[in-house]
Length: 243
Image 1 (cartoon, rainbow, N blue to C red):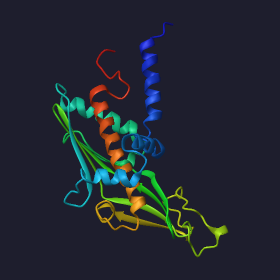
Image 2: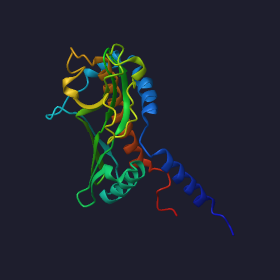
Image 3: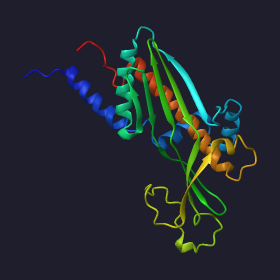
Image 4: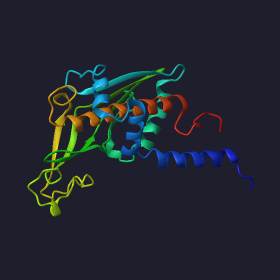
């Protein structure tokens, strides 16, 4: 039987894509990406970004970009982006709206542990859950990326100075499952971005929020880049009519 090399290549590419795109970017890869773009001094990077960032009317950090796709219909763009979304976000509950007729896809997916910091009393692990909205029309797609809060797992036994005996410290078990409330030293908080550095100068969580802001910003860039790539070149590079 003759083997069609093009089909084999396509299948391999699809498999690799499915593995690599389980998440747009893992926290460790995101940190490398952020350091390459903004440096590894988080306070300085956050301060430099502050001048170009604005909060929306809901005091959320929002990025928006229109990606032009000349010659592509709304239906074609919807298929490409629906493919990207379903291949990227494996947790189907992350897709909160998928309306072909309206030309709108909304995704809300968590990226865990984008920043960790040991303070005087507590240790913090920060995650974010951006809302990603794709509005699709003939020839263009608008990407809106919004984050309002940092989701923080605080460990009251993880700081430099703590009343908890040293041999009982848990040091911020950031891998705790969402429903696991068995460790009394761990508790959940939500920090509104608008109430923290660099939007508020005097912030006791300044160092934690500096890295969290830079990582949040870097993730917005990664999302927009991936959407543009999916629109212009597809996920595996062979989504055309020549088959």
